[in-house]
Image (cartoon, rainbow, N blue to C red; front, side):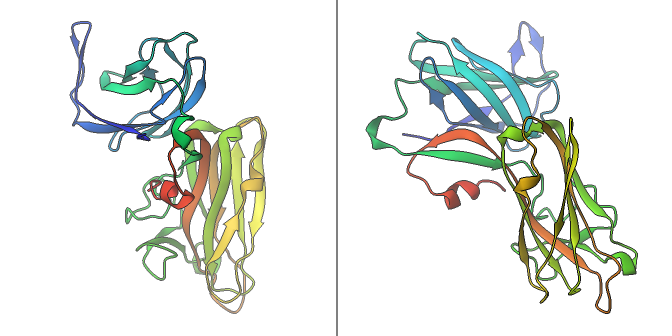
Length: 288
């Protein structure tokens, strides 16, 4: 069974009005369907899309979008329900944002069951961080303050982010905001990689919550100028909305420089189901 549906989309004429023309987009829906009476979390992904607040999703006959969350400008998380007694077969998906309409023909299917045929159900996760490994070669998606893109010994890929530390005029925080906020109960991981030269180096880590304020942690890197995996999933507070995250550089240590590097951020949002024999490595390979 296929695990997604790819549709080529162009501009549409709705109710006699001509909506804005955009370049054709390839839209992917995961999972591609559900059975009558089921509720499902859908990821709708269209590289190059610029979705934002006010976006809406129509899932066709007998399927209702209960909520739509913009994870990234090109990625939506949709809570949907299939009405009991819905007829089996494909449904069109329509995504509306302002005057732009994206129409995916037969993008979602009401099926008898996803559990047939001995297929394995695997949780599907997406990374909500924009430009998580700085592989755009820019600080796109981030509020960098004193941070900049670097190519010196990145953890993976070609680029990482660098701060020269407080003793060199840096030491401030690298931040990313999430608009709209992300449901904290959907977040299953918040991790990144850190490298510092100073043997006494530390880094402040914060998750910002809309209702309960900030949760703060302190990262301690390895003392041999090597990359350290930092896991701060515990900063997530339940029953809240996450509005941003940041990591601060270091200043004040002696005698070595206060430089910091970070790479490969992950804020994992999970909940949908991929229906295929799959591995976590294969799923995470789609994050970037």
